[in-house]
Image (cartoon, rainbow, N blue to C red; front, side, top):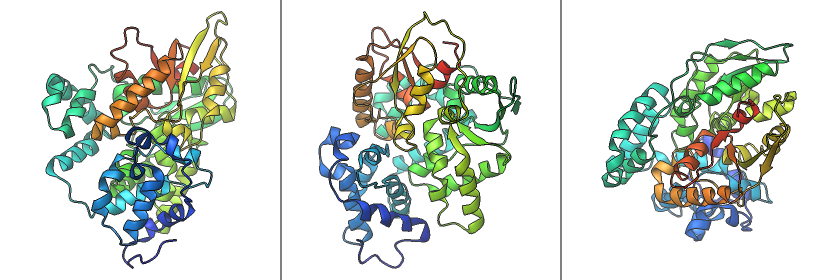
Amino acid sequence: MLHKIPDTALAPEYAGMIKPIEACVHCGFCLPTCPTYSTMGDEMNSPRGRIFLIKETLEGRINSSDIEPFIDNCLGCLACVTSCPSGVEYGELITPYRDWAESKRKRSTTEKLQRFALLKTIPYPARFRAASRIARIFKPIARYLPKEFGAMMELAPTELPPKIDFKGHYPALGQQRGRVALLIGCAQQTLAPRINAAAIRVLTRNGIEVVVPKSQGCCGSLAMHIGESQEARQAARKNFDAFPTDIDAVITTAAGCGSGMKEYTHLFSGQDEDQRTQANAFSSKVMDICEYLDNVGFIPPKKNESTAIKVAYHDACHLAHAQKIRSAPRKLLTSIPGIEVLEPDEWEICCGSAGSYNIEHPDTAKILGQRKVSNLYATGADLIATGNIGCLAQIEFHSKDKKAPIPLVHTIELLDGEI
């Protein structure tokens, strides 16, 4: 139990940190599934180690600056939540703590510039597209740049797909069974707009009317998970106004976005009652595309059963661990004739993408990315499928040196039946 917390230490929006701290019994079940503990091997880079350090900080025994490296190393993948027998909601601790500690932090000029670049480019598709083109110019010299910017240039895509301008409304085909609004995301619009195009085709073919709000913006997950909660709330409020309320669900095709929007309840916990009500109402309607299709009853595309495809399914952390969605994608995929789903080893270990983690911590992200690719390729699959754009980009990047690269697709692209 926490003791000696200064009166000003915990504002209402941070009070939720106490519950996960008190729930942790330090049993160690989280250690084997934690990507940083498995790569770094020390207790302070484990979930229970970080919980102890945060507890000591909130009690005033140590300064927040003393534990910055260990908190920064955390990917926020929440594999520890899946493995925890005590039900510790680690995400309800690490996210608000990062926000709490950020105001006390003294960052270097290059760190500030990096965070500014991340927050002012990735959430804005037009800016991100322009920045990606500029980054390509610097790729050959990425290793010579300051580490805060070298990874940005190295990870930049060599080419971008054509932009897709989505209409505001797509009617259901055949008998209408539902009405949803689609979050088209920010980075995904630039890197792989085909994913949302496939989602719209699948939904409408399944009798679902799709609304694509024109004034929608970034979900705020990137800002939220790096300790910029005020900016995250600003992004969320924009979507509260943009999305209609007369819908069955807010659909997302990116695990990170879906997880972030389902966390709005915690993000707005310290705000006024009207904002909390809006956040709760919005979050309650957020569903991953596979979650929604499984609920309404997916109608598989007609496909030649003789065409057998072995698919290695990669569990995106913010789908499997944060949203606890594992069975729905597998159930949907195996409903399509000819598809066999293969399970890679260490499914619970993060691929190293984790929002902006592979930019901020490229060395650790590289180890995890190569480890993930090795496990996926070891399945002998014809295709690799996953439900998150960050994972797709990370796995593709670390597959580039393979002699026979395995094609990567989003789960919804297979459900579309075009592959």
